[in-house]
Image (cartoon, rainbow, N blue to C red; front, side, top):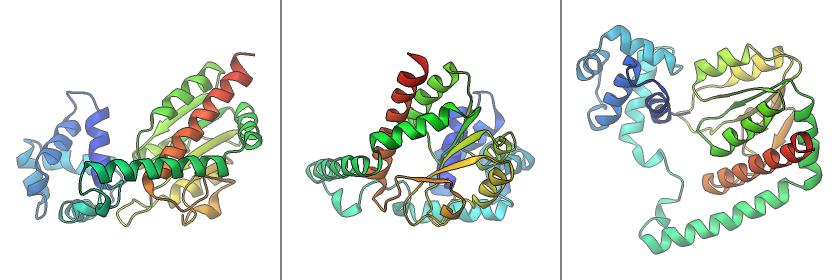
Length: 258
């Protein structure tokens, strides 16, 4: 969850008349002016108060405006590091981009085949069936989470999908020993610390399904590691979508259509 993802999430999900949405939009519309920005500058630029700006910063999970400003400055000054799904060397022209995507989609197929056996999928579905609550904590929006949530809800499960860190921390306090958390982190230098989320989920007695690369620093908290492989972002996320689709369809077949 980097600062640009947080701002975009606020803009996309808050009501049109939300003051926080207006502040997020003002920042996103003026990223080129953000390298030396102060809280006074943002308030003036977005026609809002310093209090509103500070509360929005808190809503995104930052402990101080200085932390937010540092993340924002880093995102603006090093944008080539952010929002990068393909290697820069593979983006010279349409032909190279096309071939890189084909190669990485083929890699995602191999990841899926190697890490998502029919037996594992059935085991996961049975565990989901026995849970009362299934919460998803991700650093981004995935369409297949929404599809899976619908099937879980049809079977009477409480389900939640949270992106922003404060909302995740609020959600995790609602978990119990009959809950499953499906959680993913993208651990770049700008990512907010998720340690308290894992600790709280453990205290609540929830089972944690960690979906992350083999290098994740949070693996010690996981009851299950899914897609436990070191891969590029595109291939890994594509495999994750396939895993979620498989779980959703199998859950429907086993628990709803029968």
